[in-house]
Image 1 (cartoon, rainbow, N blue to C red):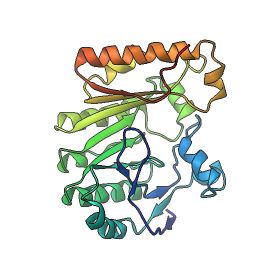
Image 2: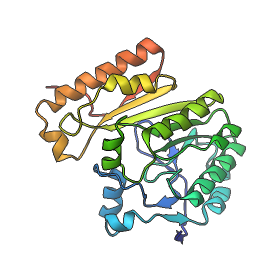
Image 3: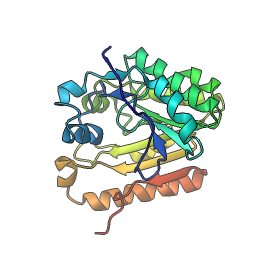
Length: 254
């Protein structure tokens, strides 16, 4: 796997539900076919050439050294560190990335810092040995494997993701799911309730629309559709005692 070095690692995120974050890999091999905000931003600022380059991830080899320098300076300000907003910490097919992610979480936990993670890969059961304050999440926008292979070709299957998440839940870990970017019916006809039932064991659900997509925006009544979906998520979570967050601009006025 290709490597690179950086001068900094931890930074404060502007994401509405985040605090600090770290992105110890540039690029992602999952090859998602919906508009990827991370890729769009990296390309805009000249940090990646094109999507083909983006699909060849590069590991930041001095990640742990940077954490050793930055944690003492920032730990008084940090509430939590998220892995990751512009890459995947448990990238399918890249054990080097997984190993670095676990080592980073362990180092942060040893300093008393909670971590949150989000992946389309497999969450290792080894995470259950780390701080019980950590929160482990998966992205799950469908249960249909045919659609998943089309839209997330390099990622782990839906059932494998769910199984790994459930294993951590059963081991006493805090778990969550991101149902974003949720597709409109002209992308796939599916039952949101079935997805909600499949993840009903988690502690938190985040729901968001598909952004930057001509296909989603071309669906007649897409605003109404997302308003209805958001209402269903809220009602489901309230009924089942699950924390929830609806992403900004998912609910709109007609």
